[in-house]
Image (cartoon, rainbow, N blue to C red; front, top):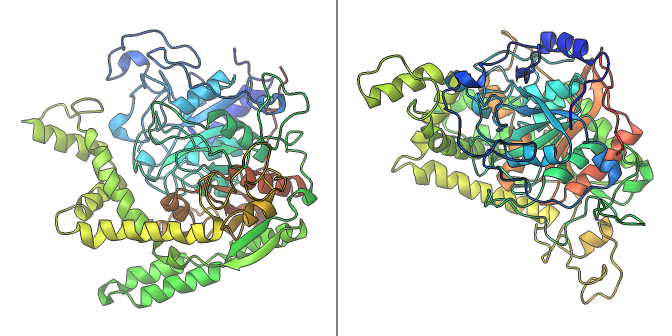
Length: 585
């Protein structure tokens, strides 16, 4: 394909980019200063074939995926998209938002990007992020500042803030980000777009610069739930270049329904007609949604804080306060509950007993893995290096001192500490036990992730449940629950305790931002899918909520969000224009 911007788009892009600063590398555009050209890259040109769209630098193509239905393909074909600058795209920047890698150009392309290129989409730029994905505001970027399109005095969220801002402003219809503890869902909530964190392993991580390998994955930010579904369908599946990736189990809810006259582009699963899926409020009637009470969670955190060591009282009190919802977020959350109930969903209260320990467990594990993954950035193989060093040790010390930001240094030190001999049992292994407990809590409510086990229901032949004799309707919530141990189809919970926060003295402290990850990091610890979406507009800013489901239940989550969007269309910031309508083949 040859990307041709619509009439009026380039001035629109330039005006928005000047206000929000979403892009690190605009791909040759004039929206912001480009990074150094490939000839200035620290890496020499690589040997091998010249990459074409859909191939990496060795000429390897993206793994073959089943064809998309035409209405789904139309949401991707000939569409521009942006990619977070910690995901590889050949000949584009791969700075990870760090001074250490500023100017570095990627020699290859990530599998997820290749899949979208093969579907006819085109990368138009790399977006800003918190350095190496470490942060909740994108203000930890070592490259530039990114602003929220709704209010440029506020942050866009993080760490995928550039991707979320670009989608919210209408510059691109969708973008890729990465989610380690909420880094897709939280900026999606702050900017008023849809943010999907898939099941761990559902999307290949090949080409994603590693931060915390057992927690992170490539996620999607998009303007509509239908487009999110189409992009996810294009990029999911096993990749031989990533041993953690896998295809969905046979019993997982399908993304698209069989077409009456299936052709080479058909794909099984419930396919909704139209760009927003053609959903009506009645189509999700019968779903059971578990509601996690924010007040109960905040109270549990406060009780844990009160029982903590005396010398840590102040920080524990901050953590307890950070779990309490802002009044506007509470209104948006209650409104989402009311709307789902009005659309025929059954809402039940649920508890996640070990959720109160999620943040310390998450940061212990993430920091430990980061300290190992970031050891490669030593100034020897790639990245900026000091002009002079006495010996290799000094070279590494100076490289990291000059190249890493404060937050990255903090997490490396923390990770090194919790992995020290004598401290692993006290911190790291205890965090892993908490992680296993949180996953067990979710499985009790949602069921397990195996097609042949509880939760999905084991199928054989044409929709029959072995031993049951009855016809099975794929994706039917009542039959899914009856066939396994899941008590609910999804869990509704807040994304972040506040709306997009500002900068300056009144801003959230770095510690409070970490403590506020309470509602998002649990999905990463359990490896489960979660999706955030705008529930309402409060005080001129979007309020996002999220739905969390069992592993490989993205279809159900998308069904719920598409129905919500169909009944209550998502808002857009002032000055937003729609350029990206579906394009038929």
